[in-house]
Amino acid sequence: MADTNILFSSLLFPASRPAQALFYVLDHHKLILCDYIILELRDVVSRKRPDLLADIDVLLAKLSYEMITAPREPGKLISDPKDHPILNAAIIADVDIIISGDSHFLELNMEHPKTMSVAEFLELSY
Image 1 (cartoon, rainbow, N blue to C red):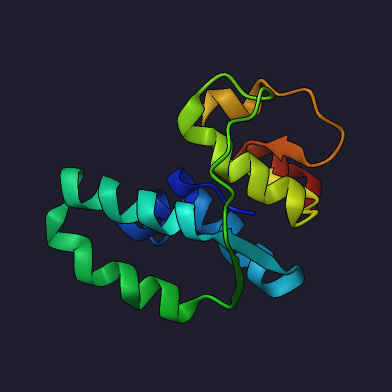
Image 2 (cartoon, one colour; image 1 turned 180 degrees about the vertical axis):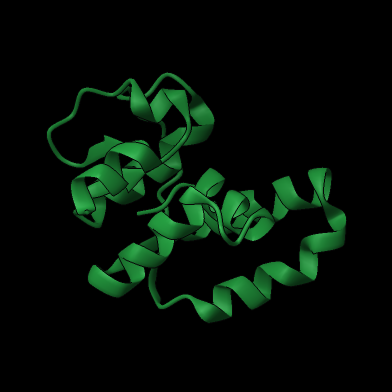
């Protein structure tokens, strides 16, 4: 699973390390996204780069992924309530890795799913 910030960085900077990690996942693994990630991506882009709103659909059309519904009930595993739906979705979908730049995810000490920064993921992958 790629967190919202990975998609946002890939949208802004197609040659960036987050984009490299995202496309590595597409080539070698199965990408899982949840509806909450897409909603959050649209919200972030509309606030920070509204000129790129149409590009979200272009990016998503280029990606091969499984879309799941994120449960909205609260969880206690992560400190930021906005991240609960994403973590809940990852657990329910039984994803192996969440790639994120969000410190709330990176501070988690879970065996499954494992949370990794882009650098950690790329180091592991190559």
